[in-house]
Image 1 (cartoon, rainbow, N blue to C red):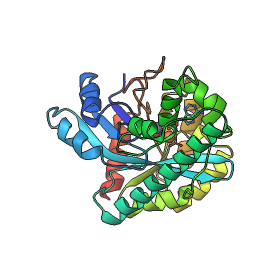
Image 2 (image 1 turned 120 degrees about the vertical axis):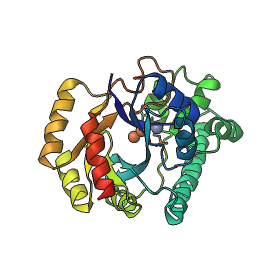
Image 3 (image 1 turned 90 degrees about the vertical axis):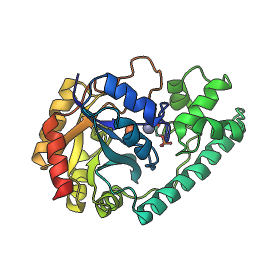
Length: 275
Ligand code: AMP
Ligand code: ZN
Ligand code: FE
Ligand code: FE
């Protein structure tokens, strides 16, 4: 068990637990520092911070995860210690979420064309009030009985090269790095091994202000982590990580704190945010 988990989702994006439920879980699991990192939304932060008041041993880092694109790959950029109250930042996130709605409707349209009609109302209800995403459409496909599980939904239809996949206008990872820096946050590349040509991508991102990358990521085995630790070191990046917990009930999902970076990582991130 780790004391630190810097990658967690709530039902404000595609996680299933409310912020308060997530905080109760991480406190019960003995975690000391966690970051709440929902996709394109920070509305889970204040309820999470409020819930954490009951657990003085637990510190919450305000975070976010931004979806960006480079040719051929999707790149996610995490931001830590962001001044999330910033109005212009919130307006930008709201625009990203609007784009998510249009793109989800397009995916629903394509699924209907393929003989799998979904009610938009149902998808909307699964997503709740926050950021809508493909996991919500996957859930609707399961509820309709078109697929038996989430992975099947992604493998057959919703994956990046799947027939129902729709793209939205995405910012570049460099833009995301600058956006996070503009609100005092520390930008970190999420799950880097999903990116081809990582070395080149990193060079551009470090030049734009990237400060860390995930190394201690739940879905990576020890060999991958060791390789990423070396890459991070070489590029002067703080090794970060966490479980990317969504509470999806998928068998084998890693629970918060099953893996995470050392406390030293938190100290380094904090020093940068304060510096
Ligand atoms: P979205 O934000 O709508 O692009 O959805 C991204 C989320 O979908 C990720 O955070 C993952 O949780 C999930 N996801 C993306 N690709 C896959 C995949 N191939 N298999 C399973 N889940 C996936
Ligand atoms: Zn997610
Ligand atoms: Fe991600
Ligand atoms: Fe994530």
